[in-house]
Image (cartoon, rainbow, N blue to C red):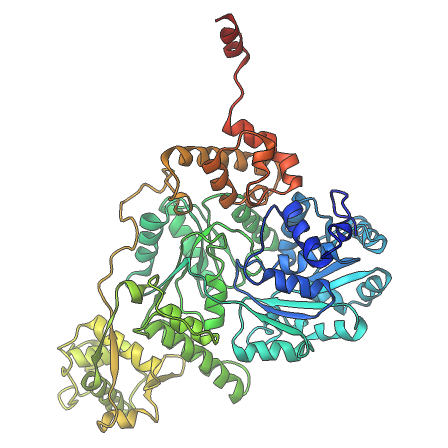
Length: 638
């Protein structure tokens, strides 16, 4: 294959053709001098024709593991990509590097589609992106048979697993690739897989005999924090104003209505925010996604329908205002922060109503008992992560089968919570639930239970004979918020559950041991927390120093901001996301080293030959503005 710059990569340093060809492409096209940990071994294996299953965290460089083999091997790399809305950006990013790439999806007109098909058959592109649905169309399969395929890459491969394929059922049909093209290597990649999911991906894609590569799941630059809900809108606003003013980020909500309300709330508080959910028309969703990718400092408020495949490197925070359904989903969503390796925040506000709502959703979900048990297992693991008194990162990585030590960069490490013996409060609460059930008068939820324990004579409480209700007023040693925390944790530990549309609390089989005094109940006491970074009340409309530039000197900081301004204008002019021009990490290195020649600039990480030729002189002009004609004349007269 001929690289976009016209160099035959197969002919470079024939003494070690595989390693040297891959390294040559890495330097020449992508602008990096060395591979990240694990990349080179995967790439060399695929280049030589081997199948691979790759588990690597978001931001770990998975895309290079198929892009470089596609450029080195003869033929076209076919990439199965989950979201057609992002294919244009994926292709734009490769085109900016000088790579010949194209896509086929329903957004194209017939002329554009036929042009891409002709390039594929002629071998005039290096990478072709397809949605999984296209492979169920006979015309697509016939097209692929007419061209020469160098490899198949299956991105977001967890979509074939039980917890993921409800989102993308067409992934289940991808095992046919091996049947129709048995000699073409396949590489399946995901950032989200427990050992069980790992095995399921291998089985469903017929990759049991492939070589499996499992990198660390750790994202040490992400600070994980889970806070009890206490006016969550105010908590979110504090996070954005005090810690992430002017930063790009994602806020996840469970419902469409919540998305709209939170986006409006942030906008009213001078934080630019956009909504994204399936209730919006396709044009609005596409426009909002494009703005988020192309503009700096926007906040996207979204349901979980948003985010897969998003390659925006400078997302500084991911906030959840509702409890995720599973650790897999939580890890995948938080992984959209800090893809550039810079400090980022994963923040979750979590409360009693989240647990009640999730339990109720499982109880009323479609499917058999096995399906509901599986949903319950996922939720239990998520609740365990929320309620742990140990390092959250240790708990999170352990879920994915990776052992680790306390990280020092999560809330439980920075402000360790205490555990306390909550057996007696648990007995009081369970006794109250038991006595109300015996009355069988009405539906009741957590609020009524707390009112009875605190001795409040509300209208609902007065419907009971509270004088004969022996548990009335026996819980005044705890505040309302503390009792709600007890209920939340008993639900998390399986000592309570909910039923019905009203979220009625009921006992479980395990409750009896607590009531008899045979089971000690340890509960988590939330510590008082201070903001982990700057607590200054910044005006969100005023430009501020961002986290990713915090290590720069004052002079380098000013240069960095000038480069960002140039990049933003260039990206807008070309209709591209800013990160496609250059990542922030590249701009920081330029600002620090201030190269004076194109040769020096070409040594900066992330600047390949195509970008050097296209943008190099513009960057040098930002660093060293040319003197005006008048200044030059004055200098000559002197």
